[in-house]
Length: 485
Image 1 (cartoon, rainbow, N blue to C red):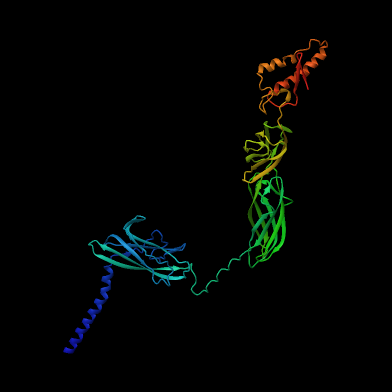
Image 2 (image 1 turned 90 degrees about the horizontal axis):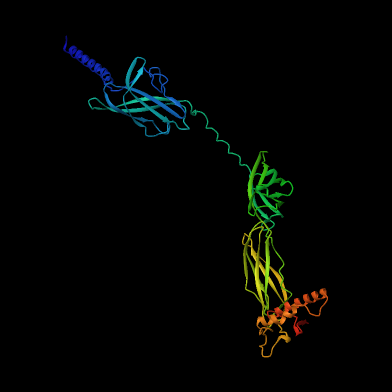
């Protein structure tokens, strides 16, 4: 054997050893991996085992990945994280998915096994494309000797409920048609407010808010809540059409019941119409109609005596009656009479509905003004809204000069002193006593009685002469009888 042959054979054996060593190295590395997938069994969330071609389940916009890992060397929990690939082409919603898993026992028939049940629920994007996508799960842990290890597992997810990558983009949904709308743009009354028991005109303006469509076949109707405001007639009206941005004015009459409450009353304007496609549409708006009860304050016509004398005090009473259905407030009587001095104004106050009150004032006829005098009684009050009412009532009387009867005056009396005021009451009594007794010469009973009654009447007036002026005067006292002129 030559030297060259020996060298060639040694080189061949060396190369063979290198090839065999390279082939044996992967086998040793695979055998040293600490984690392995349980390919024979079907765990919760799986429809088949890995040996039968397990695929993660896709449902409800989620995909569930189950990875049962078995290990003889791992100790303690495992930490698993998910890598979803390029976000631009991924069907998943990218988040930080990382969890820890502990070793658990599972029973399959008579067999009990231990494994790490790694499981993730991944959210899918709404615009995902159909296809198969790899998901890489990296698992880290430590062996029983405390040595750290890391191992990766790649699982493919098949998406079939998304969009086809070759299909054209779906057309955008048609824009919803904008329907025209009617609304009450304004309303007004032909007065400030509605009065109970009266009629009024209401004017309503209805506007088409659409700038592109007109409306047709329009029916308008009015209805007030509570039934105290009623439309005259049917309370409805018809309009053929209202153009784009146009309006329609509706005027109608309403009647207010006599018992309507004094308050704001809501009412509804209902609008039924059709758009350009014939669709029937309905709209309704509320309006507010104020109602007030009328103020009905009545009074008994006041009057002064036809004649009064200087210095006399004359009372005047006015009866006020509230005939309305709401209270009146701050009722005030104010008198203005030249020649008669009053005690100022009289505040009667509040008069509830259906009740009455009286106001009394005393006048004193002054001196220096005689003859006919005229004045006014000013009656003022307010309703429940604070609105002011006033009424002037004319008054008149005649003031007569005070006179002293000449036959009863005495020398030396002050002018203006009353006749008889110098007499003591006992003297006046005895002076007039014979006037109450029948005459001794009278024989006719009836005539005596009539005479006595006449004298009694005049005697009483004479007794009163010391306190007020009287047109009668004592002419003379003779023979126990008083003659009256």
